[in-house]
Length: 262
Image 1 (cartoon, rainbow, N blue to C red):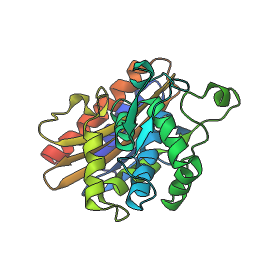
Image 2: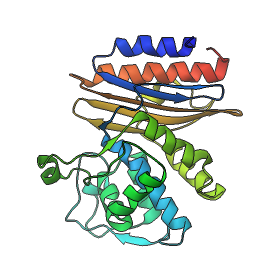
Image 3: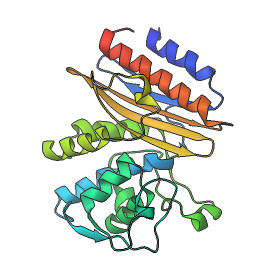
Image 4: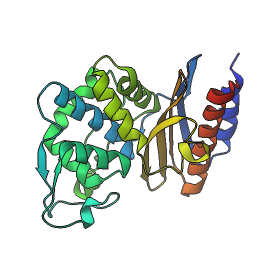
């Protein structure tokens, strides 16, 4: 018999004006609803990029303190701050990773793809046994988009990434703490975190948006309990229905952790 929490989430999903996929892992149980369905990844592709940056740093292939010059040419919009900053700009790899996550900076993401290597990022996805996650183009690469190239992932793949980031033996405790701290600084908080008391819990999240697409994923910690959530939505005529669906699901998970409601 399905638990009450899953029934509540299904009830929210059917009222959404888009195609919804959900994966949830809780201390007591886990479940997914179409969690193995492939979606356009939007900015969720930045989670594997984050993981590969820290893997390479841990292996000594790069240093998080390496300095990177941000060329004026090649800066892209869509999200982030680097596109509008001064011509002569140099940041560390850790700065780029942080900007990629907390303000979803696309220029930072593209510079990291160049530095880390798209093949290395894809190899990480293979090593982690991600079934649907593919990095096939840079962010805001209009020419690649016109050729039909896209990046893909699934809710279950994102849950796997979040668990590796939080508790995976692939990373040192120091590096896991750094990644969790970066996620916690997220500035886009209108979806999963929007109806949560952020003072009461740890929450680190990463959103994704494209026309007709609204995604969010998060790690929520309350005392000794941890929840991993990924909600992916596409085929939306307007974004509000997707954002509200994700916010409602976030509140249900939060209540479950805090109150133990099932």
